[in-house]
Image 1 (spheres, rainbow, N blue to C red):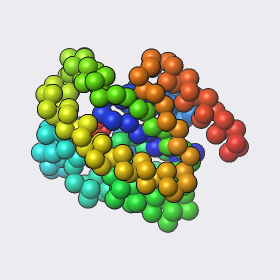
Image 2: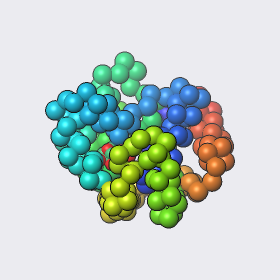
Image 3: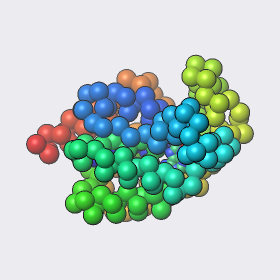
Image 4: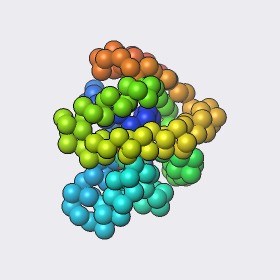
Amino acid sequence: MNIIIFGPPLAGKGTQSKKIINDFNLTHLSTGDVLRNEKAKQSDLGLKAEEYSSKGLLVPDNLVMEIVESFYFNQKEKNNFLFDGYPRNIEQAEHLINFLEKDKNVIDLVIYLKVPKDVLLERAKIRAIEEDRKDDTNQNTVLTRIDEFVNLTAHAIDFIKKQGITTIEINGNQSVEEIYKIIYQKLNNLESEKS
Ligand code: AMP
């Protein structure tokens, strides 16, 4: 099964993804993590991406499309992916669906974590300290990231829903365990349907 997890910044995608990959043995692709690693290595890609990420903006499509496609085609088993942070706009959604289709593959489920803006801003203050994330420290940057989600990523979710892909929307303003319980049940059912 292939899954996309969506949500605004600080919705808890990373936390839930860790639990999912652990229990369901999925291959995790977080474009945000890849870009942070590239930045730590000071690679051309990392430095280029940082010009945008440090302002809270999405990095150009060509950079992330290349990351995702090469990651996918470099895996031995091209199945059981958890896409986290990709796609972020309609162009990326089309790109993902198209290259999966060429490989006779599909997205089975979309998980969408919904969290109100005031809660996201509170979480940013906490994560800035706990995880030393520069993009959480500046409130304007956090607001820009939330705007990017509303203006671009939300449309990608609608686009994907229109393709008929099952989407579960979860109130992300609950405890990690409560959210995961809903996800776990859904994935368990999906897994049994597929086997
Ligand atoms: P994340 O950890 O998913 O919140 O991503 C951190 C930052 O990396 C974002 O604010 C963007 O600047 C960049 N980024 C991650 N994934 C993408 C993507 N699919 N498209 C464009 N930029 C991305």
